[in-house]
Length: 117
Image (cartoon, rainbow, N blue to C red):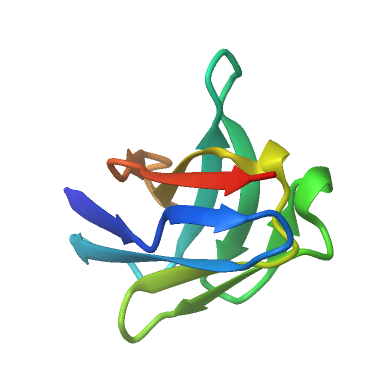
């Protein structure tokens, strides 16, 4: 089992910045994938950014150039730096951890990000 705890959400004005953090604990493997997804009301959950244990990253098209994902393998944490925020970025943001051996994915409880226009 893996537990994920997110922090850092809140209310920000358009153009502002927020930093989300996620700490993983439990049965952590050295090879894994951590990611941030988001879900706005009425929309499907979508990938925001993904980072592999080796450091490779992927970003959703809507956040490229504005968001940066990073991780600390020693601390089992993943952060999402969000800059130039837009009202369309308003959503609940979820941290995920995928075990690269079993392919099982674990989810955090989510943290609300609201961007005011």
